[in-house]
Length: 181
Image 1 (cartoon, rainbow, N blue to C red):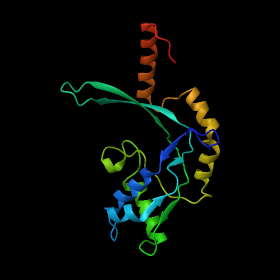
Image 2 (cartoon, rainbow, N blue to C red; image 1 turned 30 degrees about the vertical axis):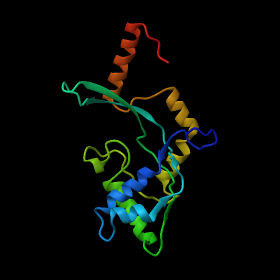
Image 3 (tube, one colour; image 1 turned 30 degrees about the horizontal axis):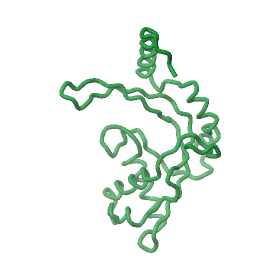
Image 4 (cartoon, rainbow, N blue to C red; image 1 turned 90 degrees about the horizontal axis):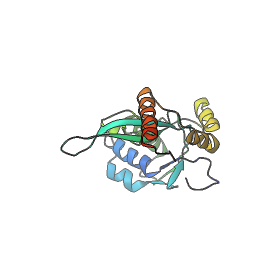
């Protein structure tokens, strides 16, 4: 996140959550996407994300006429947690309505690539829990800046396809006489 005092290296733009709430409003009675956009606010521009990152490589097809294959390499955090503060305008919105909306957003919208909102996957889903939730406490304890740095220094493949692609990449670097950074 650029700040050496931040609790984590990784973060997510807060607008991702506002966007998820706006999309979820389309599915919830009594609210509109525009209303949620006008009446909710996120305090911080970037929210620290706790969790240990891994590498995810996926084969995608380019939009060119030949549909050329491409390998997309991304960070994935299988178990993640964060603390977000949502401000809202009263009396137009009530706390329980906002809590219901963010809970629905976690299930039906999600955040990031391959989220349910886009109809292509189920990554980025989340649930709202209390600060004493055992899973939340464990992720925050184990997924700190130091653990994230260690994972960046010595990356672990998320799945078998990623492991195969990274092994091929290492062989190809050596074959071409290129030294990895």
